[in-house]
Image (cartoon, rainbow, N blue to C red; front, side, top):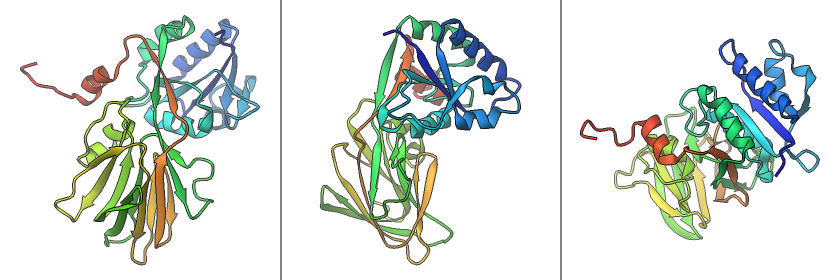
Length: 294
């Protein structure tokens, strides 16, 4: 495959990261690549970068389908980029200009090496499943009713817990009395779910995790289910309503509500260069298995 078109998306750059952005642009221009910037990225950096020299795009669509998207930032930037990509599954190269960088694994000192490997086709696609939401309200979340990490239902503006009746493939599962419940993908198993006591799943595991948030039921623990499952929640939040978050996006829901969660019909494609693997990221980023005896 001859690479001709690259999209770039990111957060606000600063004095430390601008030189790395400049080096990426120079590299792509020397390769004769057609570069386009997301409108959000251009607006956030218009006062510090000569961004007017590039075309811009709002979303990936039928008329604009680049061969890859470079995400400049942290993991949150990748999650944001996925809302621009949607069903088109454009591969994402995550360059870590943020903090932890669990999804965006390419460090600033690895950029040129990673670009060389990318253009030499020395990479592989790390395909990740996502969750999607179906509700009685078709407006909420617009065209972005999907999440790479997790979908969470949580209480808001009240000390009252939620009462959440859960069903698995139409069969009654249990009722959660809790601050909330989330459905996490294997990718999200190292995020919010992990902080609530959920297990870590390998990325290619075909499962979801149902994890309660601060449950009042002491005998309830996270549950692993097949990602082919249909999970339904009927939520009673008393009079205050509740929040539904999908990765970094959230919407307020009235009470009561019914939510159905399934595996999304499309996936996220993360570009991994040679030598990049999940187990090594676990050890380096989360100190997983750290022991003086090792």
